[in-house]
Image 1 (spheres, rainbow over the protein chains, first blue to last red):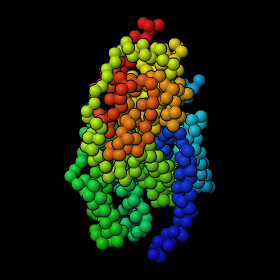
Image 2: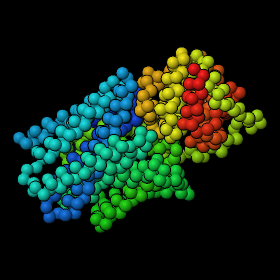
Image 3: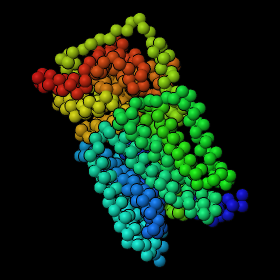
Image 4: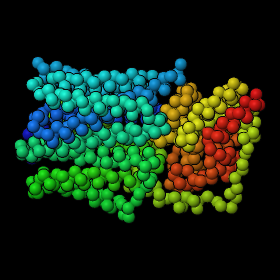
Length: 103
Length: 465
């Protein structure tokens, strides 16, 4: 219990961010026309690619001699980049089509 | 100083995610919103590389850049080359990559927290690893299924009980590890294996129209995994990005379920197959005869109509007939026929998927009418042309309480003067249930593959002009 309380105190700003972000996420998505559900899902998919920063941090922290961490981190960075780049590009492609026919 | 700049970069990154998502919810701003979020992501990544840590060996930077180049090139090519019909599985695959990334981070990082004897840190890293693994395994299965590499539904006997048991096992092992009651390292690897297993078991029994719901759910899972990892590193941009997707993804999942009038538990614990048998028996079997119509008769009917509504379904996209239908629409418009498309919320393989597919073939945005708007217009419609759609026009959703789709809002095509249904054969739709609409006296069946039939129809109409 004390463990948990001290954890909470140390990370209290993170906990606030966490709670507020949940509501922001709900609010932001609230009134989306169904036309945009697929691009939105794809865009959100790209955003969670932010996990790549974790993978980069792993690699920055790993020493040159820590081969296992370097190999796994290397793969993690590739996968994270795939998620980010693929996600944003495919979303852009979808949205480009909507724009084209408007003119 | 360096650290402060990094925090500023992260702040900007988080803001672009929020504003980008907001802009993605409006048609006019959607594209800029996506680019804005992408720019913010780029900034956050760049900041991490530049300012997170100084005096990192060049070798490591080399490896990071190498990995990023590989990821960028393959991600870019894959995203540019994918067919729009195959887009749901592409999204699923990218989602799986993100999950796998979280999984690998967990596998590397848990050692530090074990050594430091930091139980809450350990719980956070393991949560990220577990959710990432479930998301990875599940997304790969979803991808394989949508891609047709895998049989649609695999139901182990008592799969609900097995799945629940496996889920409980995850929590038990997690508790044992945190409590320090077992040898941690092997137990964590076991936890990893069970999580992958759970991801597979979660998705294999789910089939058909429920796949988008699962993808959306797994999407929010990966968001949560990223958020946990953000907690781990005390990293705000990962936390906000992850949680935003986690909560937004959950809302989207619920919206999708609503479109089909199903609950999330219903999707996951699968009651879909169960009701099918009763539905078949529900319709009267006595007067089940269908009426055929020829291409030329259809052409005449369409040509002399005032108002035609096209109901496109996934079958249209599979047959790659989006372009032909646009051609048909243009010809009819030239002859003074008013043509609209009725878009059911779950038409296609994802909500909004049909809009994307039609947009690809240059169909005018204004012509795509959502269900609530088009339904009151059907009584004044001369001809409804149903192409490759089935369940979304099935009256059983209104009339037969025994039907698995009972309660799902449908397009009221029955109130139109004439209904022409293009189908390859009399087989049932994606949900595997019979459709009373086909036996309606106003309905005529136009058998044949969508593309071929529509092409012939276009030729016929041109000859008439």
